[in-house]
Image 1 (cartoon, helix red, strand yellow):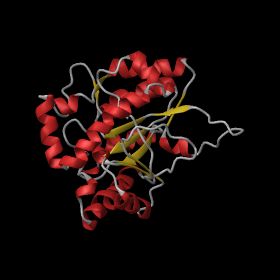
Image 2 (image 1 turned 30 degrees about the horizontal axis):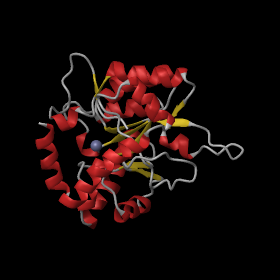
Image 3 (image 1 turned 90 degrees about the horizontal axis):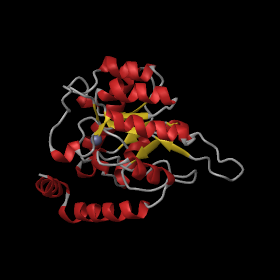
Image 4 (image 1 turned 45 degrees about the horizontal axis):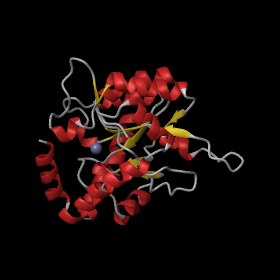
Length: 253
Ligand SMILES: [Zn+2]
């Protein structure tokens, strides 16, 4: 799971520490994709991964590359690097961010989709969905889908939860809206038997060095990251979203 990529000379969409922690430099993303390719991994979109049949009972290994939020760097930096590697990816876009400073506008989104990349939905306003009532879920999940489909002229079938916040109501709303999959950000290796509405991801952080990235792709040492994330999600549950965010902003300052 990637977010914005930093391009030399360009300001980021947001400046707080909690945001830039998830922003990789363009050159680091390029090194990661180069290594993946040289090491023989298949890089793909969510839709491609869901269409893979297990071969002779064996899993075919691949890495699904996703981007959240819909930053302009998706089109300007990520897309050409992925093209060079011959990889597809899924770009989850927040409908309400389209056209804001640093984010793609509808034409750029159309261009990204026309280049062959998969476009998914990352809600309308980036609200934490677990805090919303039914009307709120409709707006964030159903209307955002229609808006993005208008922009790309294709079906948008994959959903990513803002802040990874997800529960049974959110999954049900996404299923009835006609999505084929939902990703959150709990860390797990997804296999052909994983429920497509329970796909885990792992956030790539600014300080993720290449050896750590290689370990992650092989699925080695995930328990260490799971343990760290376990503490974070326990804190989210105990504190609730607003208090958790305030505490996190203080800690990262
Ligand atoms: Zn997001």
